[in-house]
Picture 1: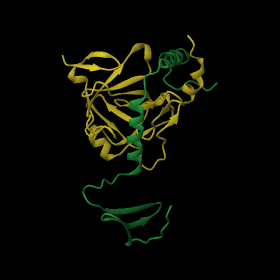
Picture 2 (picture 1 turned 60 degrees about the vertical axis):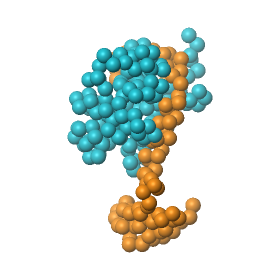
Picture 3 (picture 1 turned 90 degrees about the vertical axis):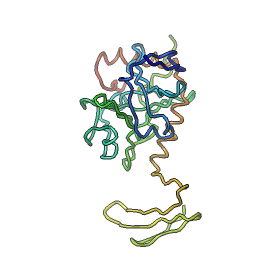
Picture 4 (picture 1 turned 180 degrees about the vertical axis):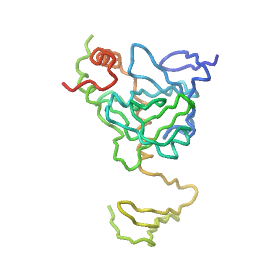
Length: 156
Length: 87
């Protein structure tokens, strides 16, 4: 079984069938086309997109439903083609598709979710795509209300 | 910001052989044509923003706080797959 020497999770052994192929890579990281969805029980519902090629590259993610329950990702024909799924609106209740927001958690300042460019994963086709929401005005740095609110409580 | 009024069929010219043509105006949208040398990338602004946000996200350390957030979230929602209600 192949392995990744990951910065955050140590040595990750994975099944090649679990890899998601991002045909266009991710904006800013076009060369990284293969990612694993890493989940850690104690950290759920947070999850991580770990690059297969680059052990130090990972994104902290949260299902968009946990950022904004009403949020729907519009997947147009171009992105749907990459994912090999039907074009349409996908949200928390969509079957066969996972919609994740990549989080930015700066050392100082609020945690934000990228709702401008949600990551859509299609486990059935093992494809992934960051589906930019052109013309919607969706924010790239949406402050997550409950993460902001809880920030001062961490003293355990 | 420089503001220029143009009609369909007209264009503006930028340095290095870049031309922006107004092809069609309809409803709330404008169809533009861009002429540019191969080495000049033409991107929609949202794609650039997405790339910059990804760079910031990749540089975000995983905070110790994440465990606490996760625990609180799970305790409050107890299996409910939506955001916790505002307090």
